[in-house]
Image (cartoon, rainbow, N blue to C red):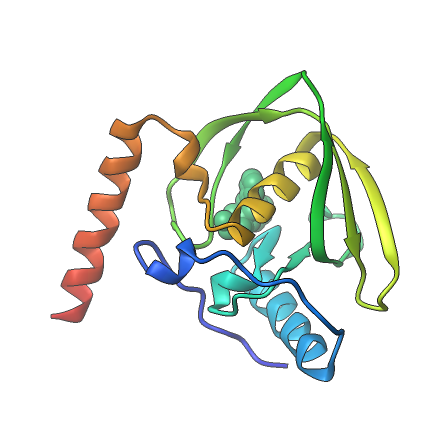
Amino acid sequence: MALREIIKLPDPRLRLVAEPVQEISDEIRSLVADMMETMYAAPGIGLAAIQVGVAQRVITLDLAKKDEPKNPQVVINPEILWTSEERATYEEGCLSIPEFYEEVERPAQVRVSYTDLDGNARDVEANGLLATCLQHEIDHLNGVLFIDHLSKLKRDRIIKKFTKAAKRAEE
Ligand code: K1U
Ligand code: ZN
């Protein structure tokens, strides 16, 4: 297992549409192990493969609270099958946009099909933080960031701030 670098805004790779996983190979198993380690170290509750520069439709999640046992979950090739009319607002963060948090409104419930790491087809109906986190991570697979759900004014302001920081870091 190895820690991988989490790429940050405005890295253009965050805007790529990730490719479906064709086969659960050793390479995918190794990617997942590294993503879990990277997500726990960050720390985060979710991570999409594109955030470590790999354009494959792979997500890791663990929404367990500090006093609960770990609950690592692997979501491969997810498809949103249904979203509720009801909406919910959560304050979201993103490991690719560190230290910026903002409320985002999304469907309150979703049903998602996916493949697990053993290659089994699975289906989950989620609400609460799991529904939000799944939507946030599936957005990543499609090159969408949570700031895209904010006003243009807020989005442009945060992109400008991170672009300036990236330029300063290059100097
Ligand atoms: O995809 C990511 O960038 C990970 C992101 C997931 C997420 C958080 C909140 C709402 C939707 C999606 C994070 O994990 S940000 C860090 C975070 O929320 C957190 C970190 C440690 C403990 C609890 C939360
Ligand atoms: Zn994110």
